[in-house]
Image (cartoon, rainbow, N blue to C red; front, top):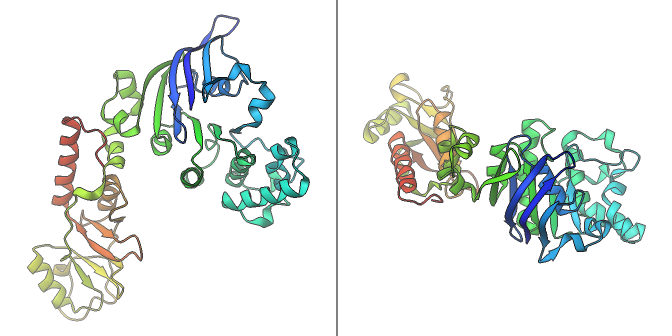
Length: 378
């Protein structure tokens, strides 16, 4: 566990970067520092590994004051990932990853073998080991940076806006990779970002800091979105925080209709009869394995023939039992029917359809849970 006990950082010119910070970053969890520029996020992070020393207060690492630990010794036991990876340009990828093991006295053979294992763990091909940083994409370089930070198996990992310099698609991939690694490794991670969506996605706890380095609120993401401490936090979370909160509401409350699907081999007349029986103008067309192909409105089709060859309309899916209510709502918004198709996690077969009415009911229930003081529904 990392603890901040009354920590203040005041520079010689009188500028206060961090002001009386009291905070805990629990063992095995991701704690995210988020806030506007000038709120002391990076300064707080760097005080943990003594790249910056606090003016007042104590930072504890599993109960030990970090000021009692020699800085080089402290830093060798803490992984550190920064923007644009910070790799050594004159070293190969395998030697970049092996940097700390070399410093710890590992043999070259052992350090390189471990580096190759980590290369695979962060999702990079082994043939990249002999390349240099300039030969890799930005996303690949960031993965190498994470591998290097993990090389000595540190219990603590500090990450200072590590994904901010890559495009949105790569950024999402890197976030997912970090969550996958954390599920395996259970590191104590302190992560700095200015992006509230990234903070909410990654954090077990999110600490919102004000300009001037004062803590505004620290809470689990769902609780933060449901009950911001004050107007500053609410404004920082954004006016769409209600939609964001749906990411933490499960799809368990959604009623699914299994009668709104039709095989693609069905005659149009049969589809029309099924739609009439179900009292629905829309049907989800599925293949022989019950996987979705698209939406169709039988009333707008010719009376003869089958659905094969008919132009099907776009659809959206969510994984039943795994995805959130926000994902289901997104899936509905992608469909002209206004409905979302629920699929099984294994194989993608259709489980049922969440209709507009079902989505409305689930959204109303989620809103009532907030009103009843249950911010972490789901």
